[in-house]
Length: 72
Image (cartoon, rainbow, N blue to C red; front, side, top):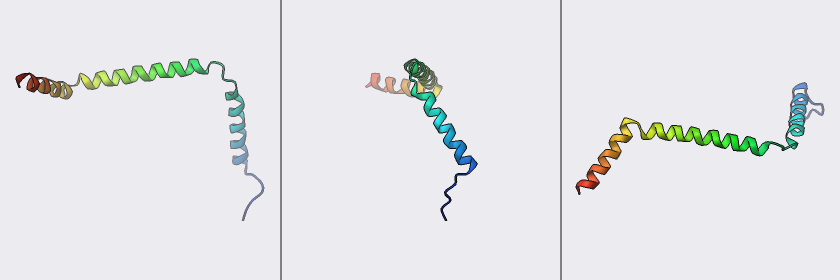
C-alpha cells in the first residue's frame, strides 16, 4: 500500500536537505576550508608516519636490513 502523504519525519528530512542545499550553494571560502583540511590531514599523516618509523619494531627491522646489506 502506497501512502501519498509524507510523515513528519520525511518532511523534516526534506526541509533539512533543502536548507543545506541553500547553504552550500554559496561556495565562497570553500577553497580555504579545503586547504585547511588538507593541511591538517597532511600533518596528521606525518605525525602517524613519524610514530611508526621511530617505533622500536621498525627501527630494529631497518637496522637489520642495513646490517645485512652492508655485511654482504
